[in-house]
Amino acid sequence: MRAQIIDGKSIAARMRGTTRAEAEELAAMGWAPRLVSVSVGETAAAELYVRNQGRAAAQAGVEFETRCYPEAISLEQLSGVLAGLNADPRVNGIIIQRPLPAHIPVKALQKAVHPLKDVEGMHPASIGNIVYNDLALGPCTAVAAVEILKTLPLKPEGLVVTVIGHSEIVGKPIAFLMMGLGATVTVCHHMTRSVPMHSRAADAVFVAVGKPGLVTGEMIKPGAALIDIGINRIETPEGDRTVGDADFDSCAEVAGWITPVPGGVGPVTVSVLMQNAVLATRMQMEHYRATYTGAAE
Amino acid sequence: MRAQIIDGKSIAARMRGTTRAEAEELAAMGWAPRLVSVSVGETAAAELYVRNQGRAAAQAGVEFETRCYPEAISLEQLSGVLAGLNADPRVNGIIIQRPLPAHIPVKALQKAVHPLKDVEGMHPASIGNIVYNDLALGPCTAVAAVEILKTLPLKPEGLVVTVIGHSEIVGKPIAFLMMGLGATVTVCHHMTRSVPMHSRAADAVFVAVGKPGLVTGEMIKPGAALIDIGINRIETPEGDRTVGDADFDSCAEVAGWITPVPGGVGPVTVSVLMQNAVLATRMQMEHYRATYTGAAE
Image (cartoon, rainbow over the protein chains, first blue to last red):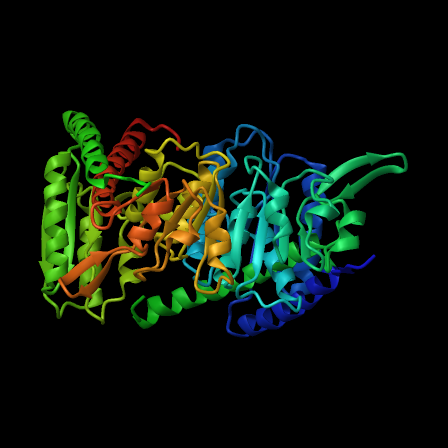
């Protein structure tokens, strides 16, 4: 095997350390960052996720409160809950846990979170601010993938990047974030005629599709970085296993760096959520100060 | 010469016809679309632009009012003007004419326009909605370039597209709009190592940089479409001339279709502004109706 395996857990731990220092600095000014997690109904998958977030918050010095609403809650009631959280000065960030019941459209809820409290970076205004290269709350998974790339000894300016997958919250935001850093970015998807043609030309490949084994070694340029964002549950003779979108073994023979799944992008994503909590709190503090000191926007 | 020259003026005229029919339909329901143009100081360049917009508005059945404020107006006063226009039910769209005096930051003003009245498609939320593939008010020049491509007999699904220039309001939005249509898009810019490598692979090239002669025939795949968004004023022995970013003569030998400058993207851009005026009015009507019929968002 030739590739260096990227250790997502240690990157995540380092980020939480930085976030903790910033959280303490904010707390000392009366702005201790505080997240509220909103989940609906009982879902085991979400519970594991929420527990992970709670642990990461503790490590990052961010307060974390969970609220669980009954399965039968209406969209109107839930919108009311969000309006209340938006208006509550003790809440700096709102996380909407998925899955949601079928009668609750996730997009309507995401738009109901105030952009300054949108720690998941899902509001259209958050996405637009990223396009504008403004310091903004970015979608956590996309930011995590880019943060991982930034730890490698690759200069992003002029870097040839191929993103496989063009979802609104992962593939596309990775593309603008990398463009913002100066990379030349191509976005491929299910309608692309030849994904290998684009992936083989790339110094770095991001894959976020949700298909195990989609990217194989012969699709990667020798020495390139491969950031695997897929999380797929597969059955094997030895029991269920979690794998990414890359065929790890063949890709690791060719790539220069590769993220494992699990242990790659996943842990960093939770750290980005905490980083966003601190950033959101800082933006709210600045907004508050501007209001009371009469400074122009 | 091999390329077919794309007639922007006739595309623009056709669009205005469609917009006019929609504007009349809205007017019949009490929602005649109405734009307000805001300019600051006396600038000859802006005046020509505003006159063009007024003429296009008349053709598209959109009411058009111009307001000109003195050079010395402060950002606070101008923000107040915009707040008034946002709150005025007789105003469906607000255009901020550029250039603005140095003491007025254009981005702060663009954010002060309500997203539902943002007919120029510049608000971060408008940009984000495009990323989300929502029916939204898009930046006029980017939408115009894509509308032109859509008139050609090229299937956008799987089309290999290279965008040269990654500005927030032209290059990047063209990239998402084309991705939304199913194209495989690469965005190149001043940090790209080899622009010709990417442009030569493309079925369609969009160029929006602002450098005359940047794209030459040998950078284009034979038969490809070339959409030239550049508008540059150059001096020639015969006097000043307006040219695009493409070296027209060499590109026209190779490309299958090419937009002239002037007469290509420019006229279509003004028609998109009118199309946005109608779309904005329709969104405001729907928002109003939802409010008074109590329908959920």
